[in-house]
Image (cartoon, rainbow, N blue to C red; front, top):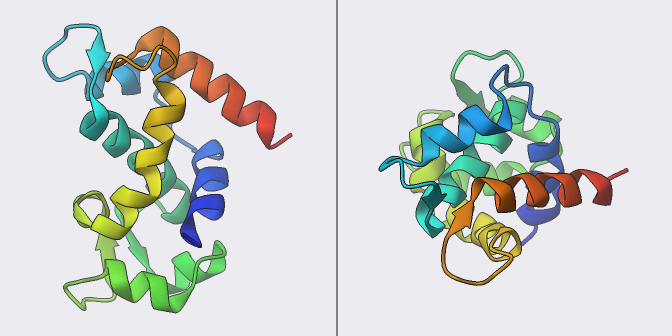
Length: 133
């Protein structure tokens, strides 16, 4: 679990021009006003990915990952293709990354109903941001 603290902090530093509401709506594929564990986890991974992708070219290199505080060993575990670059899709498909972030879903799911609403997501972001200040 060495990635968790770093990725958690990294996801706070997202440089996305999308608002939390816009990102939530993108994750809410069926438009029912809530997202399930996989959807929320992928959303949180996407936010962290943006921070690691320091040059915003759509991939994270080992150098970018290490510069942001990750380890070469963990990068290679995620980079299953061996290309030296990790795409967002590859990061979201990685069991290591997914399992690192799945706990964030439990934190965001305040009423423990197995879904996260926009209000719960916004509360989660506020608590997460306050924790690193």
